[in-house]
Length: 225
Image (cartoon, rainbow, N blue to C red; front, side, top):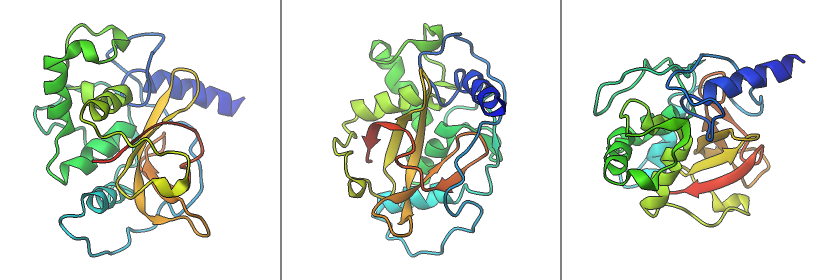
């Protein structure tokens, strides 16, 4: 009963901001709730010190995502009016999409601006969930289906998804949770012990976590910058 109640509350929250699509109750505002989170892997350990070549964008994205573990500790899906460009909510809080946006900014890619500009010019190409009639730079990049649509439009989709070794550090993965809910995360730099698959870095309800959960949900999309 407790698990079901938490999952329901999570569904209400993600329907407004980050991790969801086809929300049954379109609204610009969400509520901060906590969802059950997998407890598999080294969440809570400090990031491993590594030397990363500037040209290795995937490793830089993965490292930037891992640096959010223990820093972003709150899942908060409330709508916030953001600065533009490079707007963000306080670093200690956010949703699954914020993990992606923050990591990509470390390689000079501001997904807030890129998604907004593409939606502004090609609004019909994006999903019309939440009843939106025009782009909103405070929220568009914080919704899973908008990020995946943008990656698709930029030719970033990787068709290979069957084998664990198809996924490389810094890749973006989108999942279906249940019903209309979707989720998104980044492939980490290191593999789970005894496995070919890498850890994932994501925020599904308890802040940014690093966990062995690539196959925990149905994979909908695989993207590489």
